[in-house]
Image (cartoon, rainbow, N blue to C red; front, side, top):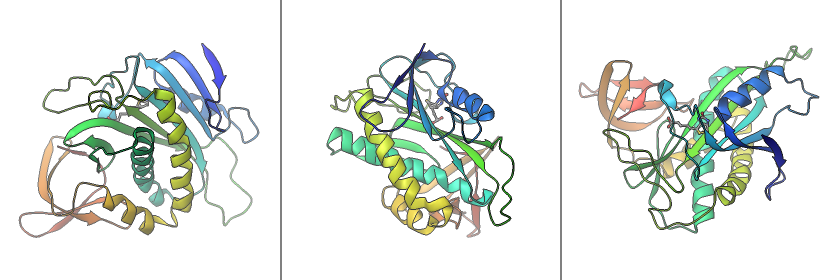
Length: 262
Ligand code: BTN
């Protein structure tokens, strides 16, 4: 069932009791939406539970009632190379939203590309997907083609899934009692603030600087899994587009654009 709810945020938020995946629904709506449509972005979709919640790398995202499952859709005109840094924007937004909703202090950290940790345990994750916007190209040759971004947030509020080989936690177990809607209201505000600061990717340097302040510290030893390959090295920063830079044991520097940190 769909019911339009604005919670206390001025944003367009569609609420569902049950959905397969908020990301999947956002993608379907976007594929049909022209600029003038009621379902044109920006919008948010939130579900109490998901039956086919999706994590990164095609994993399942267990989505029982009580946690936050939401996706926002944005139509942007930015060079494709700028879009990787939207994951930093999303991380900064959820970090601020959780801190504001819970009145701190929580030992939150962002782990590249988009895990939210409390201490060393995973508190939530972000899944970003992109597709060309179904609108004709602009007559203005200076304008980039429009891309639709779907940014999905899954945050453990009252429960956390058991994941083999991985610590997970939820806000309730950390002594924070907040509702899903309190967190979503904050997130709609913090996301807009950081997306504006990102400025279609023209302000990546600032976003990178802010992200690094709250991320796993520089100098940490990290292992990245890319397909079946594992690569270990020292975290030395982000490249111009927000991708991970690792210094390997033979002193070469490699840039990781995708993959999973272990
Ligand atoms: C991860 O693997 O860490 C990312 C998890 C992202 C889960 C969220 S829940 C809301 C949105 N809808 C989905 O199907 N996935 C994302």
